[in-house]
Amino acid sequence: VTGSSDQQALDFAVAASALKHTIPGDFNLVTLEEVQRLTAGGVGGRIQR
Image 1 (cartoon, rainbow, N blue to C red):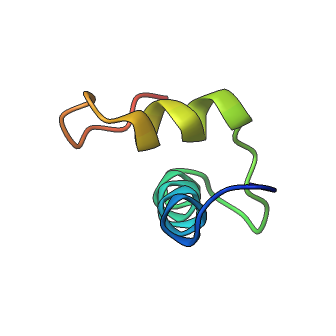
Image 2: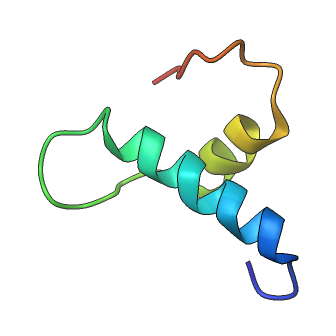
């Protein structure tokens, strides 16, 4: 997220939060690639795990 615009940082945070809701427990165990795939769009609003 370093060097990103405010909008890019917000998009990353929202995507990471959405992915976290698919994982039980207290830790966000997603990869950077998963978050980037979601922020890039083209997933039709579906999270693939």
